[in-house]
Every structure is written in C-alpha cells, then in structure tokens.
Length: 251
Image (tube, rainbow, N blue to C red; front, side, top):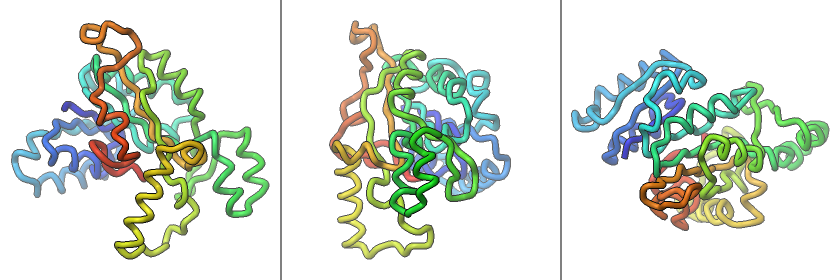
C-alpha cells in the first residue's frame, strides 16, 4: 500500500509499516524528530529505507506538499487536537486519499471529554468539558477534542464517509503516567478488555480517544457513491483498535 503518515514524529508507525512492506511517506514539521527518524532509518535494511520518503513541512500545508489522491491510506494520529480549526487539515488529509482508499484519524473524544476530570474528582473541569472542547493535556499543552458527529460531517464534506470507529483508552485513561507496565499475563487481559470495549457500545462512546476510519468511494469499482471499497480487514476486522494494519494508536 501507499501510505501517508501526517505528523510522523520519530517514526514509530512509519517504520513498522515500511518493515511490513508498505511504501510510506512521512510528513512532520519538526527538524529534530525528522533527524532522529533519519538516523534510525540509516540502521534499517536497504529494502526498508527504499520504501520511505520524508517530507519536512506543516500539516496544515499538506495539500501543497503531497500529490492529490495519491495514497491508499492517510494516517493522522494524535495531530488534529492541536489545531483550533480542524477543517483545513481534514481537507488536506481527504485530498490525499486515493479512490478506494481511506483516512485513519486518532482524535480526542469530545463526546466524553468530561470523563477523565470527573473520574479524577476535578469537578470544575468536568463541568466545563460538557460544552468547551478545549482541554489541557498531559504534557501541559492546550488541545482540542472532536465530537463524532462533527467529524463525520466535516469528512463527508470532503468526500469521505465514516466506515468504522473505535474507542481507545476506555479503562486505562486515568492510569498515572509513571504507572509500571503490568506483568505479561495481566497486560494480555488488560489489552483484550480494552479492545473489546473499544469496539462495543456503550463502552467505546466514553473512551478518551476515537479512532475513525473514513473511506473514499471508488465509483469505477463499486458504482455506489459514498461507499468505499476498503478490504473488510482494514475497517472492521473484529480485532478492535490498534491491531491489524495500523500500529501504535495510543499517542
């Protein structure tokens, strides 16, 4: 597949995908992170390096930096929440999706923004979060959440239809940053619980993050505008969020 990773950072997703045989273009605005990624790439096998192209630039200028309708998959994970207005970036993401391709978005869940402060007993913040989509994240940066209905509408306006969505961090969102990783057996059970909850109502609706898959119709194949031709495993393989084709969704 031809994949674009918007906000690729140090390349966690990009490297896994390139090692898996995909051709990946990574875009990031950070000189430091791209330099770190290039250093890591230097240690990869030549066949992996040949599959990777790096682009330095701002995500909001995406439409000017990559070809239109060029990519089978466009990943935008943990990026949209740092833009006060999501519309321009979503337009750029959508423009890069080829017919029959899809966009994969990881965003903060605005429909459940009050959950974390409420569970932690931060009541003024919880009260404000029912109406105000801005929040302070764990690294001290003010960010923004998206409601599923709003995101669905913006994507539809750019020719993409939501094929599937999952909740991410249903049970573990309030875990301390310095909490130790559980033992292997416990971790396996924890991940199974998260995956099942992330793909099941009503649990997925209260997750901290949403993983949204939105496809562009390939009219030449389907003849049905508004219906993408994604392989079923790419949109709902019953493995839940974070497994299958797209790794590392827990930014």
